[in-house]
Length: 234
Ligand SMILES: [Zn+2]
Image 1 (cartoon, rainbow, N blue to C red):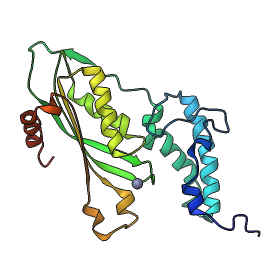
Image 2 (image 1 turned 90 degrees about the vertical axis):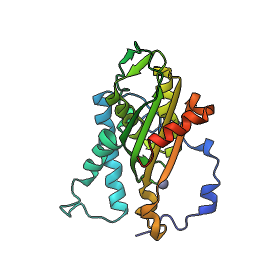
Image 3 (image 1 turned 180 degrees about the vertical axis):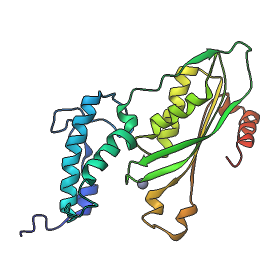
Image 4 (image 1 turned 45 degrees about the horizontal axis):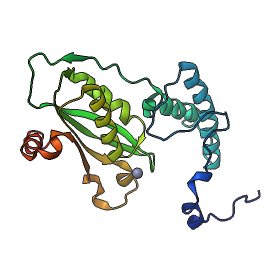
């Protein structure tokens, strides 16, 4: 059997001009950023699953994993379905319906929702990012049902992400819909690209914390301190 690729030039690979990479795929569809969204129909998603299944099969072949092994026989289809319908679903699903209510009592204090699960995928290594998110805001004219906040977080998390941009996307979205006077989005998460690869022994305890502050939360230090004190050890 002939060795088709003899040497991988890492230096050349990392210094490639990214504008030379395709902007349309072989099926003619436009490509877009990993943490962006374009809503697809069920048929489009099924078409995608079939195409991905073929490529994962190829990958298993290249990795010399026999699909005659009963544990690997249907792995390509399972993995394809998992990516499209679960792990990357935030790329293809419509945004969650966010019902807002009038702030009739003119609430002018912090409303905090904590313990929101974050389950995502790092776009650098395609490994799990798992953690928690806190959203706190002082309403303007609107308040939102607290359960809806976790849907928003999930919709943005279920894409290949970097934690820094995930927090910004959540904040931008809530800012636009709620127009709050103050907003804070704090995420604390473990990155399995560090843990599972065993980059360093102590990585298992390492967590990344990111915070995004908007409105009064940016300059009003006593408000920001109140928020951070209330969410301590979330
Ligand atoms: Zn990573």
